[in-house]
Every structure is written in C-alpha cells, then in structure tokens.
Length: 222
Ligand SMILES: O=C1O[C@H](COP(=O)(O)O)[C@@H](O)[C@H](O)[C@H]1O
Image 1 (cartoon, rainbow, N blue to C red):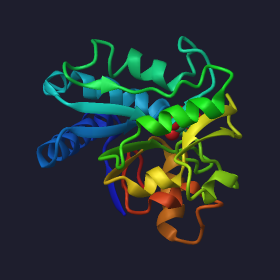
Image 2 (tube, rainbow, N blue to C red):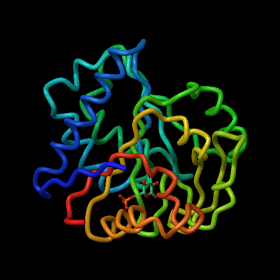
Image 3 (spheres, helix red, strand yellow):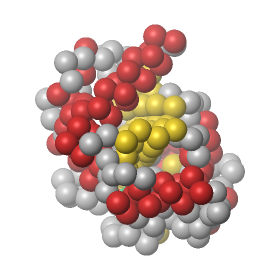
Image 4 (cartoon, rainbow, N blue to C red):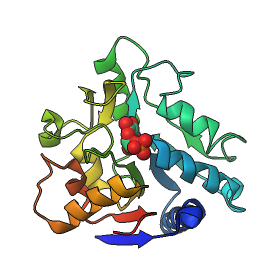
C-alpha cells in the first residue's frame, strides 16, 4: 500500500492534483477514463479543490460513476450524487464527459442495482473511496454479507450508518479497479490506516483491508 500525508491546509489541492494526474494518465493509455466517485466529508473537500484545478474543465471522455448511494431523494443533503453536483460539478460537467448515477431514490432497489450494473464498464480506471471510522468503504460495512459477494457488482444494503438504506458496489468492482485512492481526513481515519497497515485485521472486520494496494491520502500523522 502507498500513503501520502499532506498538511491539512494542503490536503485537498495536493490530493486533487494526484487524482487529476491519474485520470489524465488513464485517458492517455486508453480510450477515455472511467472514474468512480465516493461520498463523504473528505470527498467534499477534494471535489471543491479538483474542480478549481486549471485542467478540470479540459477533461474529455471521462465517465464518472458512483461507488455507493444513500436511498434518499436527489435534493437530500445526504445524496452522494447531490454532493458531487454541488461541488465537483457545480460549474457543470466538463464537455464530452458524463455522469452515471445510482438511482437509489425509488422503491425498486433491486431493479436500480441491475440497471446500474448494466451501465458499469468492465473495469474502473480510477476508484475514489472515502473510509468510515469503522473501516467501511463504499457502503460495505464491517460484518456485512456483501463483503463475501463474488458475483453481483451492485447490491442493496442496510448499513450501520445513517441513512442506513443504500446501494453499493461490491468487492467484485473494487477488485477490478486499476488505481484506488482512499480519502482519509482526521485522526480516526489515520487510525483505520494504521490498522490496515498493521495487517492484524481481515476485511470482514475492517472492509478497508480490501484495498491494501491503494494510495491512502491522509491529512494527519500516521
Ligand atoms: O457513508 C459514507 O461514508 C463514507 C465516508 O464518509 P466521511 O464523511 O466519513 O468522509 C463514504 O466513503 C461513503 O461513500 C459514504 O456513503
């Protein structure tokens, strides 16, 4: 695993540059780039800084997906899609790029998962993940049955953090991602990093162990 620790006041812009460069590199290697976004407070800081980078508006052929979504209406402050639209895409989606959201607000959650699974590419180039203080990533919570899912790519879940009803990608999608960045602000998230690095936990107890090869972006000494 890799770790970068930036000073808190620099964390967002330095992390945004790293992620932007990873998106550009993937775009140059192939035909466009598939990015999977996350929700959460660290993500909100990152998205504001990324949008402000000079090159953000020049991104082309980037498809943005989401790793999880809370089952709330689009205008609910808890919506991960809403968060991205208020921050990363507040000035619009760059020309030639697209955003594919999880439609988690309706009653047919199984149908929404199947539909979203059909939209997913075979591989995500750049996967962004927040991490909970309990070690959850996407909406894969400690002890959850989906941690052992090996077939479905997207599934409904009832988590332990409000809002509890969510849709999430499964470890199948996470395992296929090329570059993974974990956004981890604050001491509680640095503590999760220490546990993952220590190697004593397994992914059932600490889902963040699923992304041991990721680059962790910390703003607190570890
Ligand atoms: O519930 C969620 O939380 C995590 C982390 O959020 P944070 O506010 O502690 O940074 C996030 O990764 C996930 O996408 C989100 O749905």
